[in-house]
Image (cartoon, rainbow, N blue to C red):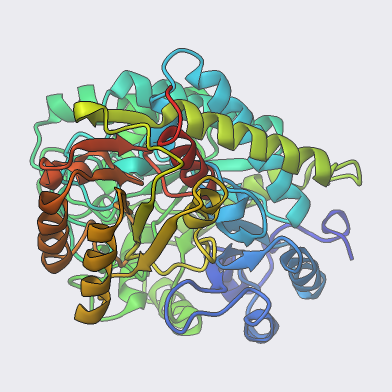
Length: 523
């Protein structure tokens, strides 16, 4: 039965349990241990749907080849149409393996004039691919302003460090996605950029004044709302200037009600950031209590609960004992229904041209990567490298994520350009023997490149460990070396001894290819 032939949400006479279940969006697939694909998770989710009709799914670790079939089967078995959501900040390939990835958002800022047009095209192409795969909601754009360079979780995910620039590009992304039929969620309201802690691990506090927050953090959210964004994601971050109680935004009536709905005039759905995060869980004895407080604060969608059945039971009990008002549930349910109306009003036809979309995605991703790759320093004209001389390349990547290309493409690209190439790929904790082998090869080579991945990633350390940082500093002091940061520009700061420095703002394959081009040719 298609979505058009079923009610989108429970009727007024439906059991309370079904109404509450519509406010839960549960995970399918995982990038967290135990890692599992969407396809491997199908039976577990189907078993859950047979017990409770959750409102939607949050997709991780899928593939473009197989995930659409899995989602179609689950839609057929669900009592009410499911809203399928995913974090696709870098395009559909972020959660659908086999599809090209776009560089991180900060790379678009580096384009200068014309960035908004590129972002809009990025949004449209992502939307077309996502909708063809059965996805309705993208948890993007990141509307945070990267105002604290120490930020371990926003960084290159932000469109920049200036509020007006982030506002411009976030709005462009929303418009592009809407053109392709994909709904978006501006995050992390009211702003996660001025933190030096990751809310996956801790509960950050932003101590800025209300005036500073108004001028710096809120303009991108205002622009997103003006652009028609239908969802806003709350931050598990405290803002004492906005709520003296010290509650994180996710649990704050002052922030979600007075500020977001009142002052900013947002009338769409509010979705939490993942409820698995420490920033949400701290101070609560159970996930159920956490969910009750979030709904009472004005949240409409509870994202990524670890124990959906137990949480549902707690919500039912809270309604029965008066701690959660039925009118609040009906209000949230109405917003979920409106989202479904938006998502299902135009079912995707068979006109999706995968070959054309894939080609355009690859071309735009590579164009953005090329134009955003910059040489920060080039002492003694170390660059470009001479293709006729030997080259030692070391890629340090401490992020073992399913979305990473395997093998990383940097070495493959350089093999086609250098006949005498030694290439090493090392992770977060290489052995001492491996590091010594690299030192020996670097000493024997005529040219040296070290590429480091410094990017924000949930539940991962930002930057290199002290051990690797010290090792790299010693390596580049031995001989003239080029250091490239495949990510945040501040990742270069510890390596001032490097004879040449480059930054790509991203580690996606297109950015690795752009780096390979740049080191052998002048811009």
